[in-house]
Length: 389
Image (cartoon, rainbow, N blue to C red; front, side):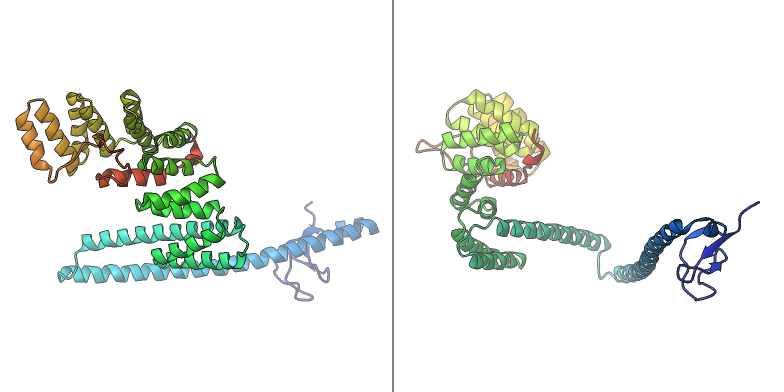
């Protein structure tokens, strides 16, 4: 026969039928502790004490769960209301856009494209703000300044200015902070990256050297500093830094291009060719094909130069520098008709990257080829060494 199961009140111990929410004797909200009615009279005094203790613990836990459930229910209700309001707002906006489109006031496709671009920009800005705040905290944590209060004020003011898009003023504040704490690797790297991104090699190198002194094994610092040294024509130091970055951290377009340029400066053409081919393998791009085309043209291997320059122009029909050098390669091959066609598509003159002046090495990042310099800077700053090879 099925035992008589009752729901006992945790306060007055009165028996209540299952499913009842409040105690019929004292009105207390009932918890979900149930037991056979006979078990309350079969146990001894010791077990009664244990049972009461467990009952209190379970009841307290159930009370917390009940309160949490109520809060979750209210939160769900708020979310549903928000979703409903958002749906109505979107419906209203779509109706307004449709009405304005019918009247010829707005263009739907253009509006949607601008809205999508704005949302993407906002997302990127939010991510940058989060990363910038994490960097600020790391800089403050690494602070070894004698005047720590002034250092913290300058860092906080600098990052606030950066967040408000007052970049020059913010960088000036951070530079003053870096003078107080010269060995702050995170701060020096951040300022160095800022100048590197803008092609200001000398300023970038000053801060990257500080960061490298504090973190000699940091491969990101090695890559950026190696490229700035190559830009200044310091071949031996650039080779050591770039070799370390590419061998330990993994391949990158900027790293292999930098090494290739160093070998060109040393007239080691075979090794330079190998590095530029690796750069193309890592990042197939118009710039990578253009670089190989320039080197083959310099080595008088015009057929191979044409192949890579054509590939660069196929990938980007607006690559004027590639069209100009392609016209010169066709000219040397005797294909004057093709040379003329390529020349018509080049709206400006170009120069071979590897026609180094007799007075010294050509600058790598701040040279005449702005497009290639931008591609190198972008790739170097985006290189992630955390994944290794």
